[in-house]
Length: 222
Ligand SMILES: *[C@@H]1O[C@H](CO)[C@@H](O)[C@H](O)[C@H]1NC(C)=O
Image 1 (cartoon, rainbow, N blue to C red):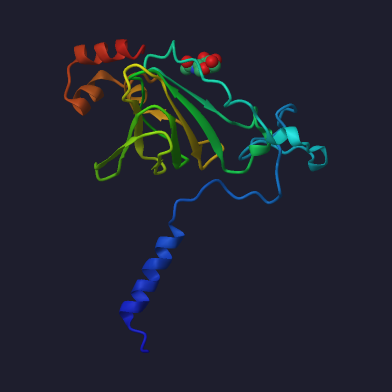
Image 2: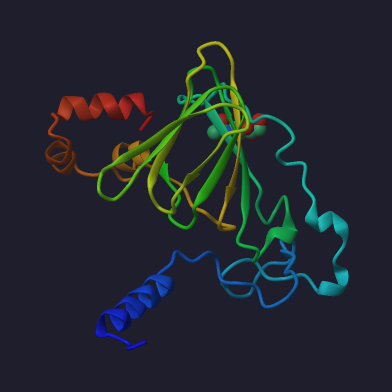
């Protein structure tokens, strides 16, 4: 078979595609790096310093952090996300993983937000969830989830979860591909930053008036 320039082109394209795949956190160089949250770090590193591996015990790898529902009452959107982290689950350090328990009140939402460092897969455990994300072309991908259904939110894209049930709370469990996914709430970042984004900018960006801006700020508690 003759190798045509088309084939070489195709090969180079595939290679470029493979190399540009979304990466998770850097892989650990040891079996584990149990977060040493007690001793203060002398330097800033990417993650949390490791405990001496000889001190590792099973309890470093277990947590009950997700056992209980988070309190949703004080939240204007009606949700609470409880996350694993290096404090409540020291063994997760350097594993590139976070788990989240998401409790949403009747008709509550997790408003549009992004995780700059993680893709997220959500499984609906209770209730009826409307979930979706918007891609960089502005297309909305949305689904209604019933218990047992999963949905994936690509890294960095704006997504939301809405409890369609007006009488019962919903429960979802998420896995995120970073131990520090980061969270940026679109509405809060735009209208409730400190210091605030100048009105002139928001007026132009959203084609609204100063009055609209103060109403939105007030509604968001900003
Ligand atoms: C989430 O729930 C926890 C545990 O009930 C509570 O301490 C925390 O304040 C809640 N967070 C919000 C934003 O309501």
